Image 1 (cartoon, rainbow over the protein chains, first blue to last red):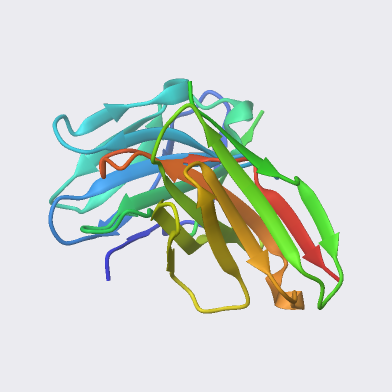
Image 2: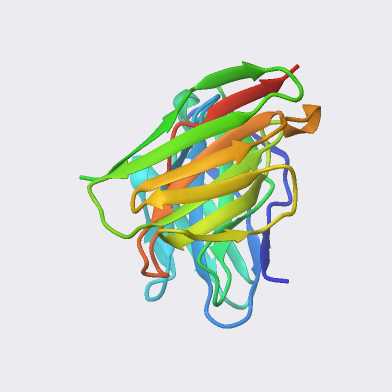
Length: 113
Length: 113
């Protein structure tokens, strides 16, 4: 089955430190990968996507993600975390031949002041 | 610009009552439309998607149904709610282009009592 996995339920980081939220994928063919953020009782907000081209993708709010084909990973990163980055983060993939996105289980990011 | 409206934001319904959640999209034509359910603030489960008026694909057999009476309107329904139908329901849209991201509404918190 084509899917994504987020191995960490929660990531804790101090404000000002770099953050990484991990995602690995399992798809056949070329993957279309996405990151979303969700604040409490709100819908998901799109952060960035990888379709093709440069392995380092830049997105909203200073986030970026690195596509690594050999490790089948698409980790979300930010050089300097903010307390306001605390939220639930989802990695998603559009499986080959399907229109709907398949989401990972989510990682809660907690940034401490 | 495109916007997505989803209502109501919260809903408390008794077991056995009917349900109707509505989602509309503005600023685009012939979008792909989706209903997801999120349980316990975690992973998203795709319920239905639609690629055109009257075209509904069901991902998970359950107590719910969906309809698309107009190009930019997507409705989630139930004839008789169960306790297990409680959750956070999210509507989303995307362009027909398979490289495109999905955009989400603000969600409906449904509590069945």
